[in-house]
Length: 338
Image 1 (spheres, one colour):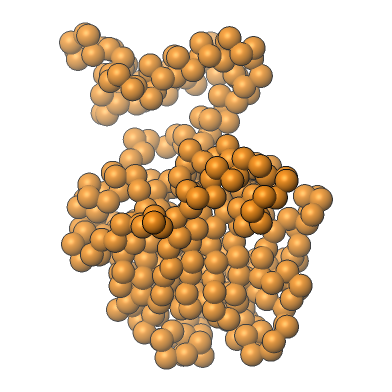
Image 2 (cartoon, rainbow, N blue to C red; image 1 turned 60 degrees about the horizontal axis):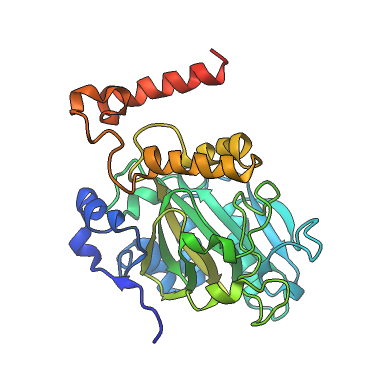
């Protein structure tokens, strides 16, 4: 039986706190059918690409942004070259209106090049768009980003934030893997990436590919979600996802935010620091630090000082309102060699 992603009525979780409690805290993907179907942008898209382009042109402030340009041979799959020494596409600076026009022209010419422009902060390139196209389950401080293009495949990657992806035009197919599949996805470099995040090189490979034997363990764990115009998908942080825009012209709007962060420090940065401090230590030392991380950070048995009254837990008491800053100051002192 295929694995099914839970669907939730977006109107039942339209309050930000309700969404946080009923959806985000579960830590699993959720489909929100029709969450953005009443947006003016989605209504224009259902008329035609030309109608959507005209609607978006109202907001275009002519700020240039980077676009990926792919030859027809890559079939819209923006990826590394075979030697991992570069990428199979070119980059070009375009205004949003220019990109929209070229996307439309490409769609009418079989075998033409493809264009993909992603992660555009709407406030920087299309100011005013967000005010007319809102998601009530998110605080207005969470700002949208825009993704437009021809048919394309974005390589399987993760985000370090919660994500709601809203399909405005075309269709999107998401192929999802849970965070603990990371070891079977054959993840590429973390500092030589196409758009910021490392990607799972094995995702999309043929069964039995000798380069990726462990991927066969992950292949059957994939969750596949198909979205149409007006639909949205909630993705918790660190869930792997390949995104396929399957129509000749497509637009998506997404929102990234951290629903549970206590302060400015990012877990990903913490992991990188742990890599340089621990990763190449002897196995016995790594195992020892794993026990300490489990005890103090991951806490499978509960709070590490549960045997003490809360008033005696010092900086391991509640992070807010004071202990977050106290721990941070202590860490900064240690990093300075104090």
